[in-house]
Length: 366
Image (tube, rainbow, N blue to C red):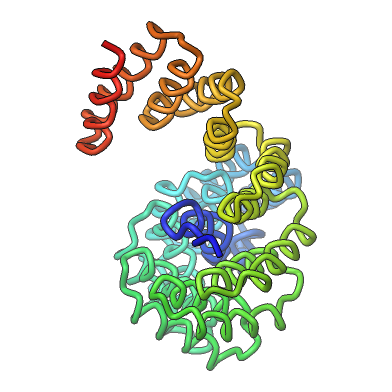
């Protein structure tokens, strides 16, 4: 059996398709509606009512402006600040969200929802130590908060504290034995540690709890494949594709597997399906170009690697592969130019092996 490529896209795709989405969503407590007592202030009443109407319409920018006016009238109300923070997060403005959650926490430090949401915003800023601190605080304030444990596990994983992350997921499961997210994330840790048999066991439990989650099937398929069980691995990937036929990461995983099994035509179809959903998916284009090189379809490879470079100008290997395709077509000057670009890019990235092979390719053309 061909060895499934462990260092390629498998694990990075899992992080995108399976793990990143495990970051808990912001707790939808009072932040969404900002239910606030107005202290019999008709102006504040009017602002809060207008703010809620704008939120309902999805006009978050104007809603924030209205709530900021309300905050000036009632500067001691943490719910107004948490509402603004929530809306900033909804727009992807995580630094602003952090600042407003911190104001809310300054007014109400023992609010577990505020701490949990702060952890979420910090995680999105990739400030994982601060996110972990906020999640831990939320867990202390609300000992039944499963999502705080899951969030903690996510950010500890990002810091490579795998044992700490595993414990956090165990705590989440102790609180909620039906938490498929915790089982799924535990499985990812076990895959990372090379414990594939245990990963399969944990991920099968996640699949029982969440049979319609493609991300679980992706991880399960990877655990099977990395453990040498090809048939069950492919079956899990195919199940993921059925569950989310328009998920490009699923198709890329299937493509990688078929490519490793030397089913190049099947792999091309899978990568093509991925691109049909996400036209700028550079990994899929790059894989197609490599297959075209292998099939000696050099004209198609040139076109594909040009697309790869257009999408990712710093991808040195694409320049190198395009140089190989030009060389095979006896387009010497273009091959030299491509190999020189590969050499420069490899050098800029400190990749000595890549630089050496590019230099060797140039020497052959002199």
